[in-house]
Length: 549
Image 1 (tube, one colour):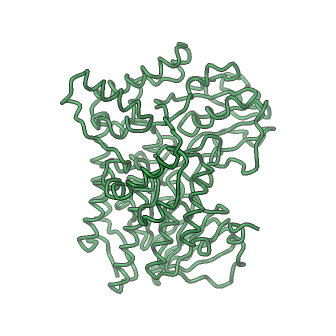
Image 2 (image 1 turned 135 degrees about the vertical axis):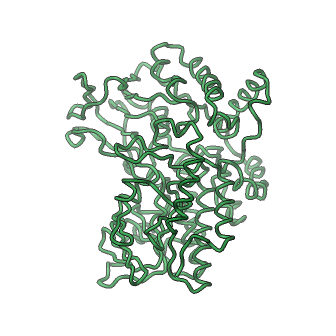
Image 3 (image 1 turned 30 degrees about the horizontal axis):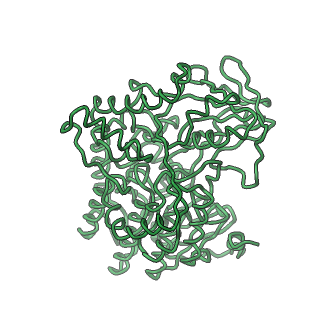
Protein backbone atom coordinates (compact mmCIF):
# COMPACT_ATOMS: atom_id res chain seq x y z
CA UNK A 1 0.00 0.00 0.00
CA UNK A 2 1.47 3.37 -0.98
CA UNK A 3 1.95 6.28 1.38
CA UNK A 4 -0.93 8.26 -0.08
CA UNK A 5 -3.48 5.50 0.48
CA UNK A 6 -2.09 4.89 3.96
CA UNK A 7 -2.72 8.54 4.69
CA UNK A 8 -6.26 8.38 3.35
CA UNK A 9 -7.18 5.33 5.42
CA UNK A 10 -5.10 5.84 8.54
CA UNK A 11 -8.05 6.29 10.90
CA UNK A 12 -11.79 5.74 11.00
CA UNK A 13 -14.07 8.76 11.47
CA UNK A 14 -14.79 9.47 15.14
CA UNK A 15 -18.10 10.33 16.80
CA UNK A 16 -16.33 13.30 18.38
CA UNK A 17 -15.04 16.18 16.25
CA UNK A 18 -11.29 16.47 15.93
CA UNK A 19 -10.26 19.78 17.48
CA UNK A 20 -7.78 21.84 15.43
CA UNK A 21 -6.25 25.26 15.26
CA UNK A 22 -6.47 25.24 11.47
CA UNK A 23 -7.92 23.04 8.74
CA UNK A 24 -6.48 23.49 5.26
CA UNK A 25 -8.51 22.45 2.22
CA UNK A 26 -6.10 21.35 -0.49
CA UNK A 27 -2.61 19.86 -0.74
CA UNK A 28 -1.27 21.58 -3.84
CA UNK A 29 1.32 24.34 -4.07
CA UNK A 30 -0.53 26.60 -1.61
CA UNK A 31 -1.83 23.96 0.78
CA UNK A 32 1.51 22.23 1.24
CA UNK A 33 3.37 25.44 2.05
CA UNK A 34 0.55 26.70 4.27
CA UNK A 35 0.69 23.45 6.26
CA UNK A 36 4.46 23.73 6.63
CA UNK A 37 4.27 27.31 7.88
CA UNK A 38 1.45 26.89 10.39
CA UNK A 39 3.09 23.81 11.88
CA UNK A 40 6.25 25.88 12.41
CA UNK A 41 4.12 28.49 14.18
CA UNK A 42 3.05 25.77 16.62
CA UNK A 43 -0.52 25.27 15.44
CA UNK A 44 -2.30 21.95 15.35
CA UNK A 45 -3.07 21.70 11.65
CA UNK A 46 -4.73 19.19 9.36
CA UNK A 47 -4.88 19.37 5.57
CA UNK A 48 -7.58 17.56 3.59
CA UNK A 49 -7.53 16.72 -0.12
CA UNK A 50 -9.82 14.76 -2.42
CA UNK A 51 -6.79 13.36 -4.25
CA UNK A 52 -4.88 10.31 -3.10
CA UNK A 53 -1.60 12.22 -2.95
CA UNK A 54 -0.17 15.72 -2.98
CA UNK A 55 0.07 17.90 -6.05
CA UNK A 56 -3.19 19.75 -6.57
CA UNK A 57 -3.25 20.80 -10.23
CA UNK A 58 -0.33 18.50 -10.93
CA UNK A 59 -2.16 15.52 -9.46
CA UNK A 60 -5.40 16.00 -11.40
CA UNK A 61 -4.12 17.27 -14.75
CA UNK A 62 -2.27 14.22 -16.02
CA UNK A 63 -3.55 14.41 -19.59
CA UNK A 64 -1.09 13.87 -22.48
CA UNK A 65 0.99 16.99 -23.00
CA UNK A 66 0.34 18.60 -19.61
CA UNK A 67 3.35 20.72 -18.68
CA UNK A 68 4.57 23.99 -17.23
CA UNK A 69 4.29 27.22 -19.14
CA UNK A 70 6.23 28.95 -16.38
CA UNK A 71 9.96 28.24 -16.58
CA UNK A 72 10.76 25.38 -14.22
CA UNK A 73 13.41 27.28 -12.27
CA UNK A 74 10.88 29.98 -11.26
CA UNK A 75 7.97 27.64 -10.53
CA UNK A 76 9.49 26.72 -7.18
CA UNK A 77 9.40 27.49 -3.49
CA UNK A 78 11.96 30.13 -2.58
CA UNK A 79 11.86 30.06 1.23
CA UNK A 80 14.67 27.50 1.53
CA UNK A 81 17.80 27.60 -0.64
CA UNK A 82 18.71 23.96 -0.03
CA UNK A 83 15.17 22.83 -0.92
CA UNK A 84 15.49 24.76 -4.18
CA UNK A 85 18.95 23.57 -5.12
CA UNK A 86 18.56 19.91 -4.17
CA UNK A 87 16.05 19.38 -6.97
CA UNK A 88 17.16 19.50 -10.60
CA UNK A 89 14.84 20.00 -13.57
CA UNK A 90 15.42 18.18 -16.83
CA UNK A 91 14.20 20.96 -19.14
CA UNK A 92 12.84 24.48 -19.30
CA UNK A 93 9.16 23.46 -19.37
CA UNK A 94 8.84 19.97 -17.85
CA UNK A 95 5.84 17.66 -18.24
CA UNK A 96 3.35 16.58 -15.58
CA UNK A 97 5.08 13.36 -14.43
CA UNK A 98 8.26 15.25 -13.55
CA UNK A 99 6.28 18.04 -11.87
CA UNK A 100 4.36 15.51 -9.79
CA UNK A 101 7.65 13.93 -8.71
CA UNK A 102 8.82 17.37 -7.60
CA UNK A 103 5.66 17.80 -5.51
CA UNK A 104 6.37 14.42 -3.87
CA UNK A 105 9.94 15.58 -3.19
CA UNK A 106 8.58 18.66 -1.38
CA UNK A 107 6.11 16.59 0.66
CA UNK A 108 8.78 14.10 1.67
CA UNK A 109 11.44 16.70 2.42
CA UNK A 110 9.06 18.68 4.67
CA UNK A 111 7.42 15.52 6.09
CA UNK A 112 3.95 16.78 5.25
CA UNK A 113 1.99 13.60 4.55
CA UNK A 114 1.30 12.62 8.20
CA UNK A 115 -0.83 15.78 8.50
CA UNK A 116 -2.75 15.38 5.23
CA UNK A 117 -5.95 13.37 4.98
CA UNK A 118 -6.12 12.12 1.40
CA UNK A 119 -9.07 10.76 -0.55
CA UNK A 120 -11.35 13.07 1.41
CA UNK A 121 -13.65 15.84 0.17
CA UNK A 122 -14.85 18.66 2.40
CA UNK A 123 -18.61 18.85 1.89
CA UNK A 124 -19.67 21.56 4.34
CA UNK A 125 -18.33 24.10 6.80
CA UNK A 126 -20.43 26.17 9.21
CA UNK A 127 -19.28 29.06 11.37
CA UNK A 128 -20.48 29.09 14.99
CA UNK A 129 -20.80 32.73 16.01
CA UNK A 130 -21.02 31.95 19.74
CA UNK A 131 -17.82 29.92 19.84
CA UNK A 132 -15.96 31.68 17.04
CA UNK A 133 -15.10 28.34 15.40
CA UNK A 134 -15.85 26.33 12.29
CA UNK A 135 -17.47 22.89 12.15
CA UNK A 136 -16.34 21.07 9.02
CA UNK A 137 -17.72 17.82 7.55
CA UNK A 138 -16.26 15.50 4.90
CA UNK A 139 -17.67 12.87 2.57
CA UNK A 140 -15.98 10.17 4.69
CA UNK A 141 -17.83 11.15 7.84
CA UNK A 142 -15.03 13.17 9.46
CA UNK A 143 -15.97 16.16 11.61
CA UNK A 144 -13.49 18.89 12.51
CA UNK A 145 -13.83 21.66 15.05
CA UNK A 146 -11.34 24.31 13.93
CA UNK A 147 -10.52 27.90 14.72
CA UNK A 148 -9.29 28.75 11.22
CA UNK A 149 -10.57 27.39 7.92
CA UNK A 150 -8.07 27.97 5.13
CA UNK A 151 -9.07 27.40 1.53
CA UNK A 152 -6.15 26.37 -0.68
CA UNK A 153 -8.48 24.80 -3.21
CA UNK A 154 -6.89 26.09 -6.40
CA UNK A 155 -8.07 28.62 -8.94
CA UNK A 156 -8.69 26.03 -11.69
CA UNK A 157 -9.92 23.00 -9.76
CA UNK A 158 -13.68 22.99 -10.42
CA UNK A 159 -13.86 21.33 -13.86
CA UNK A 160 -16.88 21.80 -16.11
CA UNK A 161 -17.55 18.11 -16.69
CA UNK A 162 -21.26 17.91 -17.53
CA UNK A 163 -21.41 20.35 -20.41
CA UNK A 164 -23.72 18.63 -22.85
CA UNK A 165 -26.99 16.67 -22.67
CA UNK A 166 -26.65 12.95 -23.12
CA UNK A 167 -23.09 12.47 -21.92
CA UNK A 168 -24.09 9.42 -19.88
CA UNK A 169 -25.45 7.70 -23.01
CA UNK A 170 -22.12 7.66 -24.85
CA UNK A 171 -20.94 4.12 -25.53
CA UNK A 172 -17.26 4.98 -25.48
CA UNK A 173 -15.05 6.75 -22.91
CA UNK A 174 -15.79 10.36 -22.01
CA UNK A 175 -13.96 12.49 -19.45
CA UNK A 176 -12.70 15.98 -18.65
CA UNK A 177 -8.98 16.63 -19.02
CA UNK A 178 -8.75 17.39 -15.28
CA UNK A 179 -10.14 13.92 -14.56
CA UNK A 180 -7.93 11.97 -16.94
CA UNK A 181 -7.92 8.24 -16.07
CA UNK A 182 -5.01 7.20 -13.87
CA UNK A 183 -4.79 3.84 -15.61
CA UNK A 184 -3.05 3.70 -19.02
CA UNK A 185 -5.37 4.74 -21.84
CA UNK A 186 -4.72 3.26 -25.26
CA UNK A 187 -5.77 5.72 -27.98
CA UNK A 188 -4.02 3.95 -30.86
CA UNK A 189 -6.36 3.56 -33.81
CA UNK A 190 -9.26 5.18 -31.92
CA UNK A 191 -11.65 7.82 -33.21
CA UNK A 192 -11.08 10.64 -30.72
CA UNK A 193 -12.91 13.93 -30.31
CA UNK A 194 -11.50 16.89 -28.37
CA UNK A 195 -13.94 19.61 -27.36
CA UNK A 196 -12.19 22.92 -26.73
CA UNK A 197 -8.95 24.57 -27.86
CA UNK A 198 -7.88 26.56 -24.83
CA UNK A 199 -4.44 26.02 -23.33
CA UNK A 200 -5.30 22.50 -22.14
CA UNK A 201 -6.99 21.41 -25.35
CA UNK A 202 -4.01 22.59 -27.36
CA UNK A 203 -1.59 20.54 -25.25
CA UNK A 204 -3.72 17.42 -25.69
CA UNK A 205 -4.28 17.89 -29.42
CA UNK A 206 -0.62 18.41 -30.33
CA UNK A 207 0.40 15.40 -28.22
CA UNK A 208 -2.09 12.75 -29.37
CA UNK A 209 -2.57 13.66 -33.03
CA UNK A 210 0.05 11.21 -34.27
CA UNK A 211 -1.13 8.43 -31.94
CA UNK A 212 -4.85 8.19 -32.70
CA UNK A 213 -6.64 6.78 -35.69
CA UNK A 214 -8.80 9.85 -36.28
CA UNK A 215 -8.87 13.13 -34.38
CA UNK A 216 -11.80 15.52 -34.58
CA UNK A 217 -11.31 18.89 -32.91
CA UNK A 218 -14.48 20.82 -32.07
CA UNK A 219 -13.58 24.51 -32.35
CA UNK A 220 -15.59 27.51 -31.19
CA UNK A 221 -13.21 30.34 -30.25
CA UNK A 222 -9.79 30.53 -31.94
CA UNK A 223 -6.80 31.34 -29.74
CA UNK A 224 -3.69 33.44 -30.17
CA UNK A 225 -0.80 31.03 -29.55
CA UNK A 226 2.93 31.37 -28.99
CA UNK A 227 5.50 28.69 -29.88
CA UNK A 228 7.35 27.11 -26.95
CA UNK A 229 11.11 26.65 -26.95
CA UNK A 230 11.94 23.90 -24.50
CA UNK A 231 15.67 23.14 -24.27
CA UNK A 232 16.90 20.24 -22.14
CA UNK A 233 18.94 20.96 -19.02
CA UNK A 234 22.22 19.22 -18.38
CA UNK A 235 24.59 19.78 -15.44
CA UNK A 236 25.83 23.14 -16.73
CA UNK A 237 22.36 24.56 -17.32
CA UNK A 238 21.18 23.40 -13.89
CA UNK A 239 24.24 24.92 -12.24
CA UNK A 240 23.57 28.21 -14.01
CA UNK A 241 19.94 28.58 -12.94
CA UNK A 242 20.67 27.45 -9.37
CA UNK A 243 23.35 30.13 -9.11
CA UNK A 244 20.56 32.67 -9.64
CA UNK A 245 18.62 31.68 -6.50
CA UNK A 246 19.19 34.94 -4.62
CA UNK A 247 18.44 37.01 -7.72
CA UNK A 248 15.18 35.16 -8.35
CA UNK A 249 14.12 35.30 -4.70
CA UNK A 250 14.57 39.08 -4.76
CA UNK A 251 13.10 39.68 -8.22
CA UNK A 252 10.09 37.40 -8.72
CA UNK A 253 7.86 38.82 -5.96
CA UNK A 254 8.07 42.33 -7.42
CA UNK A 255 7.49 41.93 -11.17
CA UNK A 256 4.09 42.44 -12.79
CA UNK A 257 3.39 38.73 -13.26
CA UNK A 258 5.67 36.97 -10.77
CA UNK A 259 7.83 35.78 -13.69
CA UNK A 260 11.50 36.76 -13.96
CA UNK A 261 10.85 39.27 -16.72
CA UNK A 262 8.88 42.50 -16.66
CA UNK A 263 7.63 45.37 -18.81
CA UNK A 264 10.48 47.80 -19.40
CA UNK A 265 9.80 49.53 -22.74
CA UNK A 266 7.24 52.21 -23.62
CA UNK A 267 5.39 51.83 -26.91
CA UNK A 268 5.18 55.55 -27.64
CA UNK A 269 8.92 56.05 -27.17
CA UNK A 270 9.88 53.65 -29.99
CA UNK A 271 9.65 53.92 -33.78
CA UNK A 272 7.56 51.34 -35.69
CA UNK A 273 10.75 49.54 -36.74
CA UNK A 274 12.03 49.49 -33.15
CA UNK A 275 8.70 48.08 -31.89
CA UNK A 276 8.82 45.33 -34.48
CA UNK A 277 12.39 44.49 -33.56
CA UNK A 278 11.41 44.19 -29.89
CA UNK A 279 8.46 41.92 -30.73
CA UNK A 280 10.57 39.72 -33.00
CA UNK A 281 13.26 39.34 -30.34
CA UNK A 282 10.78 38.50 -27.59
CA UNK A 283 8.76 36.17 -29.83
CA UNK A 284 11.93 34.21 -30.53
CA UNK A 285 12.36 33.60 -26.78
CA UNK A 286 9.73 30.85 -26.98
CA UNK A 287 8.01 31.77 -23.70
CA UNK A 288 5.13 33.90 -22.41
CA UNK A 289 7.37 36.96 -22.49
CA UNK A 290 5.51 38.62 -25.42
CA UNK A 291 2.38 38.57 -23.26
CA UNK A 292 3.87 39.42 -19.88
CA UNK A 293 6.91 41.57 -20.62
CA UNK A 294 6.69 43.32 -23.99
CA UNK A 295 4.41 46.39 -23.93
CA UNK A 296 1.94 46.88 -21.09
CA UNK A 297 -0.01 49.30 -23.31
CA UNK A 298 -1.52 46.27 -25.07
CA UNK A 299 -3.85 45.84 -22.08
CA UNK A 300 -5.12 49.44 -22.19
CA UNK A 301 -4.82 50.97 -25.66
CA UNK A 302 -6.79 49.49 -28.54
CA UNK A 303 -4.39 50.62 -31.24
CA UNK A 304 -1.44 48.98 -29.46
CA UNK A 305 -3.49 45.86 -28.82
CA UNK A 306 -4.42 45.65 -32.48
CA UNK A 307 -0.84 46.04 -33.71
CA UNK A 308 0.52 43.35 -31.39
CA UNK A 309 -2.45 41.12 -32.23
CA UNK A 310 -1.73 41.51 -35.94
CA UNK A 311 1.90 40.61 -35.31
CA UNK A 312 0.87 37.32 -33.68
CA UNK A 313 -1.79 36.71 -36.34
CA UNK A 314 0.85 37.08 -39.02
CA UNK A 315 3.06 34.48 -37.37
CA UNK A 316 0.14 32.03 -37.16
CA UNK A 317 -1.06 32.66 -40.72
CA UNK A 318 2.42 32.01 -42.11
CA UNK A 319 2.37 28.55 -40.53
CA UNK A 320 -1.17 27.59 -41.59
CA UNK A 321 -1.40 28.86 -45.20
CA UNK A 322 -4.83 27.17 -45.80
CA UNK A 323 -7.54 29.92 -45.82
CA UNK A 324 -10.12 27.63 -44.19
CA UNK A 325 -7.76 26.75 -41.35
CA UNK A 326 -6.80 30.38 -40.94
CA UNK A 327 -10.46 31.32 -40.55
CA UNK A 328 -11.01 28.57 -37.96
CA UNK A 329 -7.81 28.88 -35.93
CA UNK A 330 -6.57 32.48 -36.10
CA UNK A 331 -8.46 35.03 -33.98
CA UNK A 332 -9.77 38.19 -35.57
CA UNK A 333 -8.38 41.26 -33.84
CA UNK A 334 -11.87 42.80 -34.09
CA UNK A 335 -13.18 40.05 -31.80
CA UNK A 336 -10.57 40.28 -29.08
CA UNK A 337 -6.96 41.30 -28.64
CA UNK A 338 -3.88 39.27 -27.90
CA UNK A 339 -3.39 38.85 -24.16
CA UNK A 340 -6.97 39.52 -23.08
CA UNK A 341 -7.51 35.74 -23.05
CA UNK A 342 -5.17 33.19 -21.50
CA UNK A 343 -2.25 32.82 -23.94
CA UNK A 344 -1.22 29.19 -24.62
CA UNK A 345 2.28 28.03 -25.42
CA UNK A 346 2.41 25.28 -28.04
CA UNK A 347 4.71 22.95 -29.94
CA UNK A 348 3.75 22.41 -33.60
CA UNK A 349 0.08 22.71 -32.65
CA UNK A 350 -0.99 24.52 -35.80
CA UNK A 351 0.82 22.02 -38.00
CA UNK A 352 -1.33 19.24 -36.52
CA UNK A 353 -4.23 20.41 -38.69
CA UNK A 354 -2.26 19.59 -41.85
CA UNK A 355 -2.36 15.90 -40.93
CA UNK A 356 -4.70 13.63 -42.92
CA UNK A 357 -6.14 12.05 -39.75
CA UNK A 358 -7.10 15.39 -38.14
CA UNK A 359 -10.40 17.12 -38.90
CA UNK A 360 -11.28 20.53 -37.43
CA UNK A 361 -15.01 20.86 -36.80
CA UNK A 362 -16.35 24.39 -36.42
CA UNK A 363 -19.04 24.74 -33.76
CA UNK A 364 -19.02 28.53 -33.89
CA UNK A 365 -22.30 28.73 -35.83
CA UNK A 366 -23.32 25.07 -35.56
CA UNK A 367 -22.89 24.25 -31.87
CA UNK A 368 -22.83 20.88 -30.16
CA UNK A 369 -26.43 19.92 -29.41
CA UNK A 370 -25.86 16.73 -27.44
CA UNK A 371 -23.78 13.64 -26.92
CA UNK A 372 -25.42 10.54 -28.38
CA UNK A 373 -24.41 6.89 -27.98
CA UNK A 374 -22.41 7.06 -31.22
CA UNK A 375 -20.63 10.34 -30.53
CA UNK A 376 -21.39 14.06 -30.82
CA UNK A 377 -24.43 15.51 -32.60
CA UNK A 378 -24.35 19.09 -33.82
CA UNK A 379 -27.31 21.43 -34.01
CA UNK A 380 -27.78 20.79 -37.75
CA UNK A 381 -28.15 17.05 -37.05
CA UNK A 382 -24.66 15.97 -38.13
CA UNK A 383 -23.34 13.12 -35.96
CA UNK A 384 -19.60 12.63 -35.54
CA UNK A 385 -18.97 9.03 -34.53
CA UNK A 386 -16.30 8.63 -31.88
CA UNK A 387 -14.72 6.09 -29.52
CA UNK A 388 -13.35 8.61 -27.01
CA UNK A 389 -14.52 12.13 -26.14
CA UNK A 390 -12.08 14.44 -24.32
CA UNK A 391 -13.65 17.50 -22.74
CA UNK A 392 -11.16 20.36 -22.60
CA UNK A 393 -14.07 22.54 -21.53
CA UNK A 394 -12.46 24.56 -18.76
CA UNK A 395 -13.34 25.39 -15.18
CA UNK A 396 -15.51 27.48 -12.93
CA UNK A 397 -12.42 29.56 -12.26
CA UNK A 398 -11.47 31.34 -9.07
CA UNK A 399 -14.73 30.92 -7.18
CA UNK A 400 -15.93 27.45 -8.21
CA UNK A 401 -13.86 25.31 -5.88
CA UNK A 402 -15.19 27.14 -2.81
CA UNK A 403 -18.81 27.49 -3.93
CA UNK A 404 -19.01 23.72 -4.50
CA UNK A 405 -18.58 23.40 -0.72
CA UNK A 406 -21.56 24.32 1.46
CA UNK A 407 -19.86 27.14 3.40
CA UNK A 408 -22.09 28.94 5.89
CA UNK A 409 -20.92 32.15 7.55
CA UNK A 410 -22.55 34.56 9.97
CA UNK A 411 -26.32 34.57 10.15
CA UNK A 412 -26.58 31.44 8.02
CA UNK A 413 -25.40 33.21 4.87
CA UNK A 414 -23.72 30.94 2.33
CA UNK A 415 -20.74 31.69 0.16
CA UNK A 416 -22.45 30.10 -2.83
CA UNK A 417 -25.41 32.47 -2.55
CA UNK A 418 -23.27 35.52 -1.82
CA UNK A 419 -20.97 34.90 -4.77
CA UNK A 420 -23.89 34.06 -7.07
CA UNK A 421 -24.93 37.71 -6.62
CA UNK A 422 -21.55 39.44 -6.47
CA UNK A 423 -18.05 37.94 -6.25
CA UNK A 424 -16.27 39.95 -3.57
CA UNK A 425 -13.24 39.52 -1.35
CA UNK A 426 -10.92 41.70 0.69
CA UNK A 427 -7.41 41.43 -0.78
CA UNK A 428 -8.31 38.05 -2.25
CA UNK A 429 -7.72 36.42 1.14
CA UNK A 430 -10.79 37.29 3.27
CA UNK A 431 -14.56 37.57 2.82
CA UNK A 432 -16.75 39.79 4.99
CA UNK A 433 -19.30 37.72 6.87
CA UNK A 434 -17.01 34.69 7.13
CA UNK A 435 -14.77 35.15 10.19
CA UNK A 436 -11.57 33.10 10.38
CA UNK A 437 -11.99 31.98 6.77
CA UNK A 438 -8.78 32.69 4.86
CA UNK A 439 -8.33 31.86 1.17
CA UNK A 440 -5.66 31.63 -1.53
CA UNK A 441 -5.86 31.51 -5.33
CA UNK A 442 -9.17 33.30 -5.00
CA UNK A 443 -11.00 36.14 -6.76
CA UNK A 444 -9.56 39.65 -6.70
CA UNK A 445 -5.95 38.59 -6.23
CA UNK A 446 -3.27 38.01 -8.91
CA UNK A 447 -3.24 34.28 -8.17
CA UNK A 448 -6.75 33.97 -9.60
CA UNK A 449 -5.16 34.02 -13.07
CA UNK A 450 -2.39 36.52 -13.82
CA UNK A 451 0.63 35.16 -11.99
CA UNK A 452 3.37 32.60 -11.85
CA UNK A 453 1.43 30.59 -9.30
CA UNK A 454 4.24 29.67 -6.93
CA UNK A 455 5.21 33.32 -6.60
CA UNK A 456 1.71 34.45 -5.66
CA UNK A 457 0.71 31.47 -3.55
CA UNK A 458 3.87 31.73 -1.47
CA UNK A 459 3.07 35.39 -0.82
CA UNK A 460 -0.56 34.72 0.13
CA UNK A 461 0.20 31.83 2.46
CA UNK A 462 2.99 33.78 4.15
CA UNK A 463 0.62 36.72 4.63
CA UNK A 464 -2.01 34.43 6.16
CA UNK A 465 0.57 32.87 8.48
CA UNK A 466 1.71 36.32 9.61
CA UNK A 467 -1.89 37.35 10.33
CA UNK A 468 -2.52 34.21 12.38
CA UNK A 469 0.74 34.75 14.28
CA UNK A 470 -0.21 38.39 14.95
CA UNK A 471 -3.58 37.33 16.34
CA UNK A 472 -2.10 34.71 18.63
CA UNK A 473 0.49 37.15 19.95
CA UNK A 474 -2.26 39.68 20.66
CA UNK A 475 -4.49 37.11 22.36
CA UNK A 476 -7.17 37.40 19.65
CA UNK A 477 -9.17 34.40 18.46
CA UNK A 478 -11.49 35.80 15.78
CA UNK A 479 -10.79 37.96 12.72
CA UNK A 480 -13.05 39.25 9.99
CA UNK A 481 -12.61 41.71 7.15
CA UNK A 482 -14.96 44.62 7.79
CA UNK A 483 -17.55 45.51 5.16
CA UNK A 484 -15.68 48.79 4.65
CA UNK A 485 -12.33 47.08 4.05
CA UNK A 486 -13.89 44.68 1.56
CA UNK A 487 -15.65 47.52 -0.26
CA UNK A 488 -12.43 49.52 -0.46
CA UNK A 489 -10.62 46.56 -2.00
CA UNK A 490 -13.44 45.79 -4.45
CA UNK A 491 -13.50 49.41 -5.61
CA UNK A 492 -9.72 49.50 -6.05
CA UNK A 493 -9.79 46.16 -7.86
CA UNK A 494 -12.58 47.23 -10.20
CA UNK A 495 -11.03 50.62 -10.94
CA UNK A 496 -7.80 48.87 -11.86
CA UNK A 497 -9.39 46.04 -13.84
CA UNK A 498 -11.99 48.10 -15.68
CA UNK A 499 -9.27 50.26 -17.19
CA UNK A 500 -8.05 47.19 -19.11
CA UNK A 501 -9.27 45.54 -22.29
CA UNK A 502 -9.54 42.30 -20.31
CA UNK A 503 -12.71 43.63 -18.67
CA UNK A 504 -14.34 44.14 -22.09
CA UNK A 505 -13.51 40.67 -23.40
CA UNK A 506 -15.60 37.55 -22.84
CA UNK A 507 -13.51 34.75 -21.32
CA UNK A 508 -13.19 32.77 -18.13
CA UNK A 509 -11.14 35.72 -16.85
CA UNK A 510 -14.46 37.51 -16.27
CA UNK A 511 -16.56 34.41 -15.61
CA UNK A 512 -18.45 34.59 -18.91
CA UNK A 513 -17.95 30.85 -19.50
CA UNK A 514 -20.44 30.14 -16.68
CA UNK A 515 -24.08 31.08 -17.38
CA UNK A 516 -25.34 33.44 -14.68
CA UNK A 517 -21.96 33.99 -13.03
CA UNK A 518 -21.56 37.62 -11.94
CA UNK A 519 -19.27 39.42 -14.33
CA UNK A 520 -16.09 40.72 -12.72
CA UNK A 521 -12.45 40.41 -13.70
CA UNK A 522 -11.42 37.55 -11.41
CA UNK A 523 -7.75 38.41 -11.15
CA UNK A 524 -6.18 41.53 -9.70
CA UNK A 525 -4.63 43.35 -12.66
CA UNK A 526 -2.49 45.87 -10.79
CA UNK A 527 0.49 43.56 -10.81
CA UNK A 528 2.07 41.08 -8.42
CA UNK A 529 4.51 43.60 -6.95
CA UNK A 530 1.79 46.17 -6.32
CA UNK A 531 -0.46 43.57 -4.74
CA UNK A 532 2.32 42.46 -2.40
CA UNK A 533 2.97 46.07 -1.44
CA UNK A 534 -0.69 46.67 -0.61
CA UNK A 535 -0.88 43.48 1.47
CA UNK A 536 2.27 44.53 3.32
CA UNK A 537 0.80 47.96 3.96
CA UNK A 538 -2.33 46.40 5.46
CA UNK A 539 -0.19 44.25 7.77
CA UNK A 540 2.03 47.22 8.62
CA UNK A 541 -1.02 49.21 9.71
CA UNK A 542 -1.80 46.57 12.32
CA UNK A 543 -4.41 45.11 9.93
CA UNK A 544 -6.67 48.16 10.09
CA UNK A 545 -10.08 47.19 8.81
CA UNK A 546 -9.62 43.58 9.91
CA UNK A 547 -11.81 43.29 12.98
CA UNK A 548 -10.31 41.14 15.73
CA UNK A 549 -11.69 39.93 19.05
